[in-house]
Image (cartoon, rainbow, N blue to C red):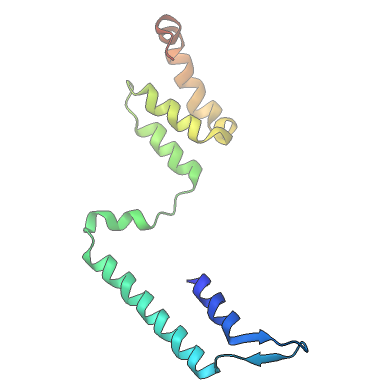
Length: 121
């Protein structure tokens, strides 16, 4: 990755005592090494994707924002899964004002009396 590229670049040039740049590795060798590393990286990624179970492929990309994902988790939790809903809210504290009127207020009002009786932790 980028660390390897920085290492190779730093080995390509070194500052001499007089402040001039002197090459340690010639440019052709550097290009060959970086090209080879890029090919190896690409082959590894393709191999990894080709041998993995197809049902997990969708876990590598998702276009949902954190707010959208949290909303889906909150809405997909069953009525008896207050712990899942509260964990989702704890994971997304900045979304209280965004979700408030639409999601949180109805859920809170619906369950408040039960929570008063049960005193959940």
